[in-house]
Image: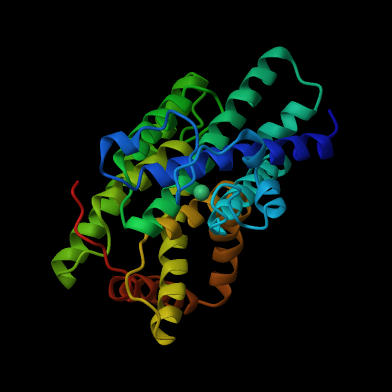
Length: 322
Ligand SMILES: [Zn+2]
């Protein structure tokens, strides 16, 4: 299969997944268990009319219907095509950049093919979970267990497939499967543990909750999927992005309640796609530059702690049930 064809198919499939994520995002916002069920067909949020299949085509229906429902002519939120486009873009990016996609489009052996398919499916599931969690967190300041806990389980199980999580040990006596399971477990422990630590210290020092236990579970999930190095990278990126956006928002006098989940998810997406170049920068290019400019490490430390400090002032968590 040609790569352009493969990327287009992946993006189209991503659009359909995004359409399903809209349903997940919409229904998980309610505490009522009846409304939380994901079964059944889509209904208009205004008048409750059943949405017909030809009005449910990702992005296209929204454009053709000119952002209004066929049933009651009331506006369909921009949010729906946005989630579909975002998911389509992420799946297309996965087909373009994932090393698994490269193995799939090359003429690979049967076993390599199996690993590539499993790896791609796991990464697609990971991205889908991040999209759903981000929008739910944005709306409700909650990261529901019903997504994070299965996410952690899938991430850890994914460690059984070789090469899915980052490797932590180069020891060849350990089997490849165990090595990646260890990498996944290490990611789970480091991602969850580090976030838990920041949360505990933050609440003690500042007496306010910048992070909830949902963030701890989200980061444990990120670590289980991506390994411990990428989990730390995600945390760092999430703090910097959150502090910059939150600081700008505060400076412009916008709302002060900013959930942390979307920033962590953005950091996780960057870590997934750009882990290798960033780790090369941090562990090879940067130390080289640092040797020539000894004061730069204090600059980095000040930057990181400054971001974290700012974060505790601009991000505030609502009271969470869990
Ligand atoms: Zn309607």
